[in-house]
Amino acid sequence: MLDRPPQSPTLSNRLGGIVKRATGEAVHWAWETAIESAAIGPHSKRGKRFGAFGLSSVICFPTNTIFNEQFIHIGSGTMIGPQVTLSAGMVPGQACISDPVVKIGDRCLIGKGSGIVGHFEIVIGNDVWTGHHVYITDQNHDYRDITRPISQQSMPERSVTIGDGSWLGYGVVVLPGARIGKHVVVGANSVVPAGEIPDYSVVVGSPARVVKRWTEERGWHAVD
Image (tube, rainbow, N blue to C red; front, side, top):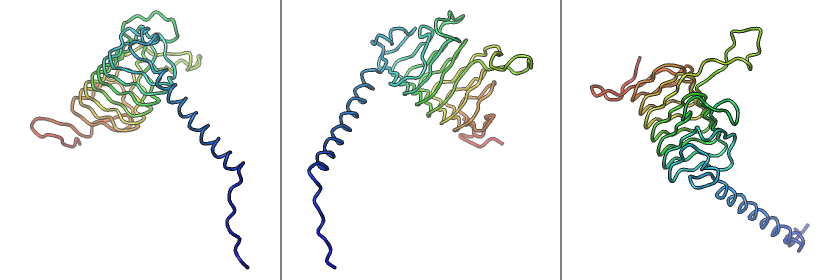
């Protein structure tokens, strides 16, 4: 039995393919235009709501929740990825007791899908980079009153600091009272509780613990 020669696509199929490709290109163009146009910068209408917004900094589109921008300060040359949450206080319009509540330094990079939720004081130094989906907060929920839902309980705010030049890997959680030193590596999915993380160290785990440190005498070395 002889094989049949391949049949040429019909005119309608060819036209359908052309229309589909053209539509796809138009969607990509529109989305890229939206990303560029809707980004928040220091000279944009939304950017001017912030307490400070440094030159060459940007919050990428689309954003998640952003409110009480007047209590949020962003340094220069900082990029905040898409789908990030930035908030000061509990609800929009709240008069916060400190200013700034959230301070992000110069040349920082905050990864996609991250959340920085401040109520009293979160200070992120210069040149701090994070992976995606990092969560930083200075207040948590309490659970000790069994007569009230946990959602209605809160613990006192505790300041959070992250030192210059540090790197927080994917999925890191930084809890109230954490004080992360400078040039610190926090491994992916680690949970940093209240307490001091020394300069020039590597921490991993939940709760995060120091596994490496740098000293002038020994350089980088493992910590037992």
